[in-house]
Amino acid sequence: MGYYPIVTSGHPALRQTCEDVDLTDPNIPAIAATLREAQVESRGVGIAANQIGMLLRMCYVGETLLINPKIMAMTVETETTKEGCLSLPGEQHEVERPLAVAIEALDLQGNVVQFEADGFEAKIVCHEIAHLNGELISDVGHK
Image 1 (spheres, rainbow, N blue to C red):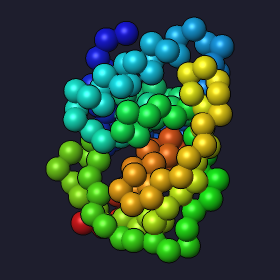
Image 2 (image 1 turned 30 degrees about the vertical axis):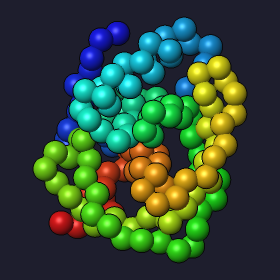
Image 3 (image 1 turned 60 degrees about the vertical axis):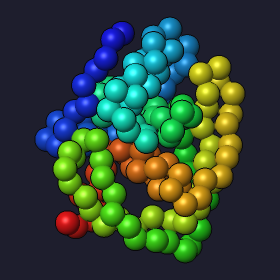
Image 4 (image 1 turned 180 degrees about the vertical axis):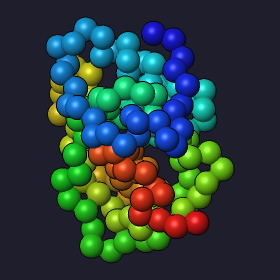
């Protein structure tokens, strides 16, 4: 599919809730590869499909593809730190995130993937799932 540029603040895809991925769609593997390429090219630690203008519930956290991800549980304890975002270049916002989360998603073969993330990885997961819900760090944080 080729490289898609990262869309930035003001692009309508960033404010829309993404649709569940239908794994019977033969284009999904190519879209996943395009998403990964965009993440690598931009040197991001995570990326959501709507950051390349595709309204699909698909994201990468590190090298892990998450399809239709859901946060199943999270700690009550939180931490507030500064976060940046590929779609808000040059900006940093203070954002409160849970210290740990339990995630359920699908892989490209339709297998259920369950894992727990804590620390920095938990922040990335929450950040990317927020993107899939049409939310940006500027919505919850301040400069």
